[in-house]
Length: 319
Image 1 (cartoon, helix red, strand yellow):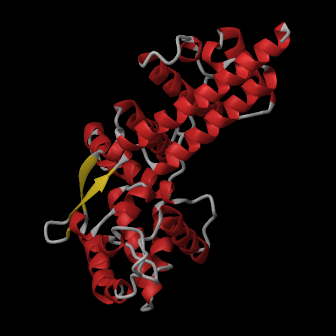
Image 2: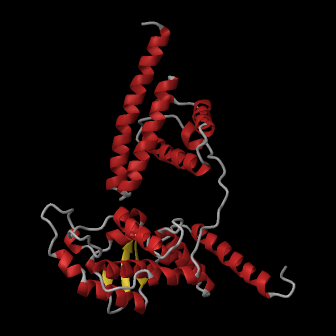
Image 3: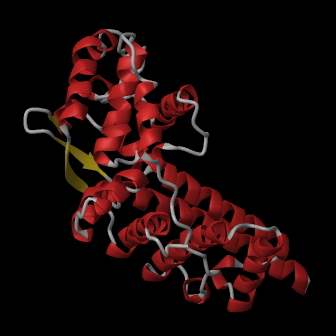
């Protein structure tokens, strides 16, 4: 075997080894760390794409060097990947390499030491009062889906929940008498969020008029826990995050609003409304389930920008 063939064989062995370690790592994230299936799926795709690059370039990922990591990032940049996407891919691989180094499966620190591209901070889109009223008006009606949609929209507006968190809510997580719901965020972190009266009324109506009939149709092969889910499909199955997002998009279209309004827009609106109402930043952080206060602070910038708009319109020298 000549030198080039030997290097190629060594690189191939390194790729196979890292691929096996990656599966163990992803299993660790899913089990011990309670990382969501969606995130694990994304990490797997990012790691596999990186290993594909290693194979094409003849790079051994077990001994990858700083120049080789830069070359990989350079290819992503030339392929016009957004800075956020590049940082996400880099984050997935940093986590894998950190895990491998801790267990003596790799010795290279090139990946963990590589800084990602800078990302400009964009203020999130929020809904105005008129748009919220249009959304709620689009859920008026007596039909089961109208009742369901009203409960869903009110729930999201009242809690600022992520759409996956709404999908995960079970009946035992609701305390309508006290007006609260228990949400499980990223990493299964638990938080208790109040429900205002109109949201409680909409959810109670859904629980009385719509959910019981759907629960009777829950099939035996339904996902475990479907019978306990708050939001059920017509067939009695737990509504997935994707299915709830589709219902939300239906309401947005019915209200005549732009498709750029998503369930996360409702979450942004929830946070901004609280800050505009003089809620303190720590309380908003807790209600949103943010691990870091810096993540919540972006809504302070959004609140200030809205106040600046008011100032420009109302102050005699605002222009």
